[in-house]
Image (cartoon, rainbow, N blue to C red):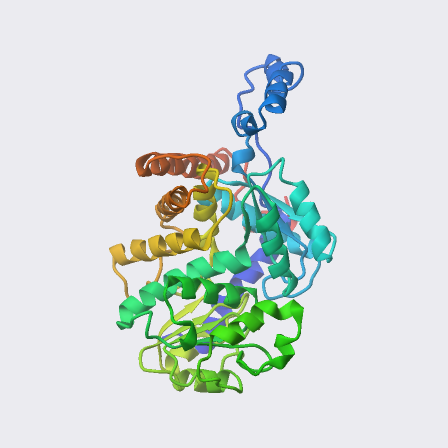
Length: 453
């Protein structure tokens, strides 16, 4: 086994490379045409005077915007930069590299045309109003890196008022992929979802959404103990009971932690079968002794970014059988990138009006089944991003669930949805490869990176 110094050096390398390659490319996404431009005469079709006819058609029949434009494949990635990747409130400009990266993943993994939109406001109502005003152009909105507790109010309000699907990836995306990981972890250790005890380190947007989805999936809420920075969530938390800003936390005080365990993670972890940590970046946020106090065959998810709450090798040494992180450079990456591209692909393909928890669970179950089909083991809990079939299969599961729930504007068979998703995703990947092959996307060299040439 490599020593700790080598493992830490490996973990730090992506950040070092990012500092070289971001200025080299100066952005990760751009707009390219999807229509023919065989001659300059074509502009008379795509712009004036020809464009007036589809405009008039949409004015008479607003739903035909999905026929004449790319609205059905446009997603706005909206952030105020107040809680970015474990970095905190770094502002909208500093959030741009993350939102561009999100847009890149949307396109390459899901064939979705996503636009990074960082908004210069911290007022939740202004952000809500801004997002609602985007609806004419977009088929969906992905909220990203917004601080709590306002993120709950923003998502709930937009889901109620918007007529296009609005999704907060830090909540629903994280919940989908984590649920997939839990499904397969329990398969490996041979424990039932109804029986397991779950300790959750952190009571932010991600863990609250994970708890909500796990409960809907079948985990007993009485067997969940969630910890925030002050204490466990329990029925005696009057500081939360009387604060309307934390009504979501108080809800979990009421329905979880049947034994009213108090204290913090050290007390809550004792005897737990599963630990899910999405809290302050590590590597010393989760202590080895907490893991050592867990039940046999402990499952540990330490998914803070950019550094997990404890290094995986230390978690294993403390007694964890299965360890997952949010990073791609360790086994068992539990990362939203496995969720949102396929989930949005399926949502957009059926023009669903919203994205329900049931659609998220359908995606989670499909993710888990793909890995199970290929052969589960302790270091292969859920699929990886390079298994391309993940995203069309996930899209189909989501689309079918939306149709089943009666919230899809478009109905199609499983076969039709699979063919459509495969075609769109294959095209996105092929275009990227072709642009690299032809030199329109330059392949970096050491000399170019240094000089910016």
